[in-house]
Amino acid sequence: MASPLVGIVANPASGRDIRRLVAHGTVFDNNEKTAIVRRILIGLAAVGITRVAYMPENDFGIVPRALDGLRNPGATSPLRLTAEPLAMPVLGTGTDSTRAARLLVEMGAGCILTLGGDGTNRAVARGCANVPLVPISTGTNNVFPLFIEGTLAGMAAGLVALKRTATRAIYRAPRLEVSLNDTPTESALIDVVVSSLPFIGSRALWDFSTVREVILSRAAPATIGLSALGGALLDSQPDAHGISGMHIVPGNEGPEIQVALAPGLVTWVGIREHRRLAADDSVRCQPGIGTVALDGEREIELAPTTRVEVRLCADGPFVVDVAAALETAARAGYMQR
Image (cartoon, rainbow, N blue to C red):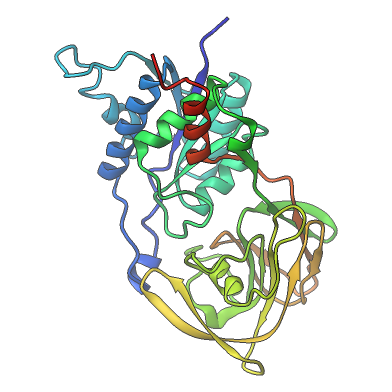
């Protein structure tokens, strides 16, 4: 039987959009991503992973650079694992992440580590099926991915792939299914926003004055972005699935709430109406010319008659709880020799 495989999808374009100009977001350059991947590889090797496959890219070569030095026989702790690029074309778009995830599923990967923001993970979630993710934050909006040390992320991913953790170390995240004219078309992990902007343009959504409606898969006060908007409006507990979604319509007719819409950008936002969403609840959006943004990026241009419906689903991607994975492995004796 082949040894367990772990995948790495590191997006070289994450963390560099226009929101760095209109707010104070951290710039995750590719040198930092390389350093994170290097620590991931060390963590994977430490728990016994010997096979890694990764998404290739033409922009920088994050994983190959991370491997430099670790494979050097003269290194303090030379790396003893095989890391190979996936056999796939590189288009330089989000479809690369989706294709990489699908290939990793076909190859039998036991876990996939991602480096990016909400948008990167949305692309991976399209193709990862039931393979659990360890999402590491290197993007702009980072509600879905984790601010986690790469070494620990690598160890946790390796333990999951080796089946040395308890089932409670993996949970299922919610998602938002977007239907156009009654046909399911797209999906988002954190938020779907209907904007009055008629064109996709630079994709990033940063001007809240253009927002007509917001649908959230989770309302979390301790986050940056629109999920924090929902978090400021929380007035009850999550549903039986642990889901606390929300539908929000901005407007000057209602109360104002204070929210951190972007890193270093705290503002007051008027709320005309809002309601909590549980699993399988749907929202039929108001018609009109505009765009639909998925996880912070405009993806769909709307005609005046386009019908947009968003449903909150409990069947999103599986995600590794890194702390729980390490704890349960330790309690089972896998961290001893």
